[in-house]
Length: 370
Ligand SMILES: Nc1ncnc2c1ncn2[C@@H]1O[C@H](COP(=O)(O)OP(=O)(O)OP(=O)(O)O)[C@@H](O)[C@H]1O
Ligand SMILES: [Mg+2]
Image (tube, rainbow, N blue to C red; front, side):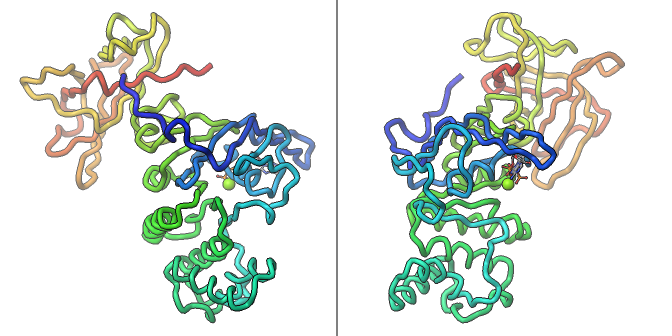
C-alpha cells in the first residue's frame, strides 16, 4: 500500500512540542480521571492544526495545558523551544478563543478588542490603530462603538477572534469556535478562519468534534480518543489511510470486514472474500479491513476488478448519489456481511440482487488493537 508523504515535512520546526503530557483530575466524589495519558505531539508553526475526537476524549484539556490554564500532572509543554512550566497564560505566546467567546457584554466592540492591549499598557494611539486593524482583519470594520449585545452570533465570534489576534500571538488556540453558530454560518466561518490563518501565517490549533469541519479546515488533523492520540496526518491521510478502527469509523462512513488472511484475500466468518493488496497482507492472524462507500461501484458485465454479490437491504437517495446497504452473499438465513456503497446514477431497488466491484488497493487493513 502506498503511503502519502509525511506531514509536516521532516526537519520543520514545531511551534509547540507536547512531550508525554498527562493530566489527571480528582473528581469531587474522590475518583481519579485520567484526561490525558502521556500525549506527545508536535504542532507545526504557521499551519492549521485540528484536535478531533468525541466528547470527553481530552481535547479541551490538551488545549488548556498549552494555553497555560492548567498544568500537566506529568510530562511538559514546550512553546518555541521553551519549557512552559509555571508560566501563566498571559505570559505565553498563545491566545485563546473560547467556545462561548467570553466577551464583556458591558463594553463596546472596541473596548473588548482593546482589553488585552490596555492591560499591557500599550499607548492609546497604537491601541486605536491596532483595534481598527484587527476589526478589518475579521471583516468588521467600523464596528468599534457597537455594543456586544447588538451583535449577531457570527459577529460576536469575529469580535472574539479580533480580541485574540490583536495581541499578535504565535499560536491561536480555538476551542470549538463554531459550536454556537448555525450550520450555514459555521460553513462561512470555516472558510473565514482558514483565510485568516493563511493571511496571518501564525499557527492555529482548533478543537472540534465535527469531522467534516476538521477535514475541510486543517493542514494537520490529530484524532484523539480516551486521552490519547489515535492518529495524526493530513486530512487525506486520515480519511484515506485510517490506521485504527476508531479513526476509520469516526471520520466518515466505512464498511468493516473482520476475518483472516488466506493467500491474497481476507476471508470473513460469514464467507465474504475480499481481495487485498498482497504487499499489505500480514501472516495468518485475525485482521480487520475497511473500505469507503465511494470506492465501490456497480459491476459491469466486463468488469475485471473483483466482485461482491449481495442483496440491497436499504437505499437512501442523497441527491447526487444513493447510499446503499448491501447484505453480501446468500441472503437466505445464516451470517452475512454488510457493505455500504454510495453509487451515482441508477441502482437496484431494495430487495434486488446487486453485484459491486472494488479495487484491492482501496481495501485498507487496520492496526490491530488489543
Ligand atoms: N476540572 C475537571 N475535573 C474533573 N474532571 C475533568 C475536569 N476537566 C475535565 N475533566 C474530565 O476529563 C476528561 C476530558 O475532558 P475534556 O474537557 O478535555 O474533553 P473534551 O474532549 O474537550 O470533550 P468535549 O468535546 O465534550 O468538550 C473528561 O472525562 C472530563 O470529564
Ligand atoms: Mg471540550
